[in-house]
Length: 286
Ligand code: JFT
Image (cartoon, rainbow, N blue to C red):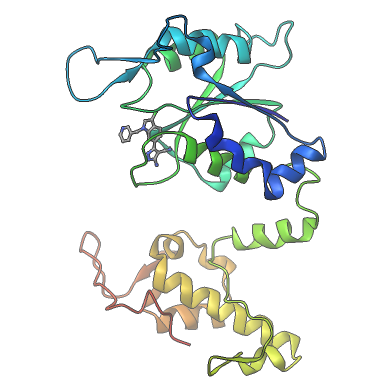
């Protein structure tokens, strides 16, 4: 996969030389190129921004500079003509869809991604409009509901999430398989290693027992309890048909009941606000 990143802070992306993504690059699985947007300016001050039409605070990134940069790194059209397959343009933005593992999986199938990292109040909206109009796929994505100062950190997150899915990047594909089980709808169970006692805390006895079936059941109970405590949205999305009697008992113990084929908090009437849990979400009971 080829990934081009355009930014006014190319050094921000240096972290991608490290760790798994760096390994993928050195193994030739990922061709990552970071570009300085200012290379496409033409004035003495290398200006990339200007004041917003219509007024308001801050500055907006100029479409002409972005257009020259993106034409160079994406190819001028999205028709896949003479310069390889059409690039998929990824634009981090607080106004985007929230980036999920589903987006990472879809992007990992692409041959060429271009990530446009903006700053200030954002990039002139005509840039996205223009590349869509010229046949490119464009994804405007946010990494979550908190405020960053620009797209670079979001790009790091997305490139790491995509990069680790490229065939051959994660050494042991079993860990990807195990993860996709987790992605089947529950948070992961807590994990422990040596020493068996630390800071007065013991590793749960069942994990030392060597009793595989009991270990599996304990881990599933933990995953269910955590998910119930921390992620009611994930419990609601579970298909009760995939849960066994014991699963349903664990959830019932945390206030979840099956009604009309869906999980619902007992006592919550439709449209009523959910009763807060008094802090158990932070530290899940054993
Ligand atoms: C923030 C961002 C994401 C994501 C791109 C560009 C400018 C600053 C800004 C902040 C708030 C409102 C502009 C960006 C993000 C996220 C991404 C830009 N800013 N307007 N902030 N938070 N989750 N992805 Cl371009």
